[in-house]
Image (tube, helix red, strand yellow):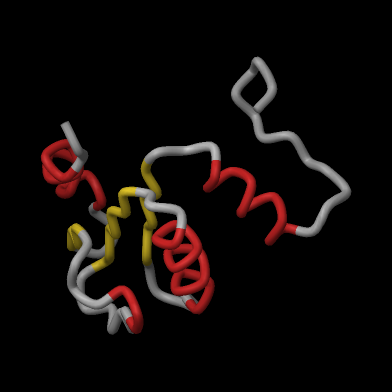
Length: 96
């Protein structure tokens, strides 16, 4: 990131940048809202293969296809347009 907090835009493909960013973090937090979330399975599986702690924050009433992820990860629901309701749960979901 730039000092201003904005993301650097680079002439590389997005999957490569995402893989590199996942590798440099201890925790992967995924935010799932309505729309296509097919990328979620790829990114969380990659993080899982690298022993990253995974927290999934999912809008209520979204049919999340967890696939290989199963039910082993923190899954925090929130009401549509009201993610603030999940903030305290997110804090408790993080490893100590």
